[in-house]
Image (cartoon, rainbow, N blue to C red; front, side, top):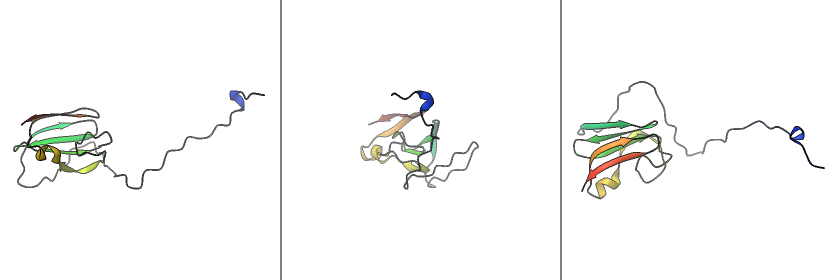
Length: 112
């Protein structure tokens, strides 16, 4: 005897509990002051759907926000409410010229 869809028991959908070490990222729909080290001057900025990137006058890239797909460029999928310098670019001696954030990506144009 086969079961029909009418016989199937319906169970409510349950959300999966958040991972214990998952970072909470605040999302706000209004401008907010941002603390960068005092000696840094921002020359360019780009905003994705859930992350932001800035280029300093010295050509360094700082990113923050939602990082699930690695779009922050820190070598992981961590999210951060605080701007973090993208150390890979510094280690390679690359100077950032342009940055464009997409929904889940970040495009960076650099000079060697």
